Length: 411
Ligand SMILES: [Zn+2]
Image (tube, rainbow, N blue to C red; front, side):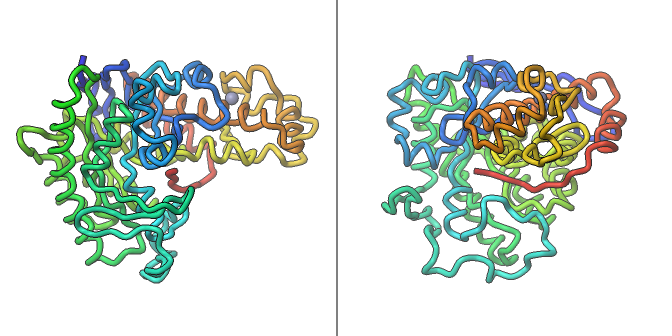
């Protein structure tokens, strides 16, 4: 079996839809949240537990796996899913974001606020950069041992084919809100040229690697906060065909100003071919997921749920809070009384408070299970609400109670 996307229901009056992405490793019912296992593991949680909490697929990162253990090791192991004992579909992020993060020196959590940063000078000076971009690709220094490497569109495709995920992303130049408009234009032209090279190399590798499960390739739409650039990218990549090969789906990436998230996503999704799936890269805060779903995104990934869990922060229907806070010392209720996860059905806030205060390893495991379940289930509930015709009510009910605001995050 190869790759397909079936739309079951399209919401009238909005871009939202419900569908199924079929991959060689199984189906994904959309809209869906895809938890992140950057280095072929969701930190502190067994794959079995991820399956039990409702995760339909996992997303890993090509850059990290290329550096360690090496993408050839995953190829030899039979691909990413088999290597990490994950019984389902997988995604890999192309490495563009990570490599470029080294370049501009921006933090892992992108500031999703265009008002705070306007100037290019927040970007690291040339000599301090760990990566340098040119028209052919990116040269970068490993964050692990300082060794030098080079990613080109061809290398990214070779690495991602070796890793063997069901859904891969084209190698793009990811910019930040801090870059100037002329630079955004340059980066977009580059991303387009690289998209063609990715399609060509992807086709060559698909033909060469006979007998391997089909891997789908998604193009990545850049263009920052600019309407004309976003629309041009969606038009150009949406219709792009090289040697008979076109993208199987699309990722919406790059700097996304939180206040403009819905607007930017709708510019793009109104243009992209309706019959292909769309993934919103690095977005996973509850309030942002509603915006993504109602503006036509089918899948999402974000490291936030697991990253904040390790710092004792948990999502609940009443908002986000920290379990290490002393008010939970004698609170013998679950983290969220409405949550059906393993943690909430077996442990109390008082126990969670105790293991976080004692820096016990199990704290990360239990809190991550809860947070991932919370986000996976929230998007599942959005899917059901779309089918039941009460998405607007469900959204109003959730946001009426949930108040915390947080940013975009990729690993
Ligand atoms: Zn829970």
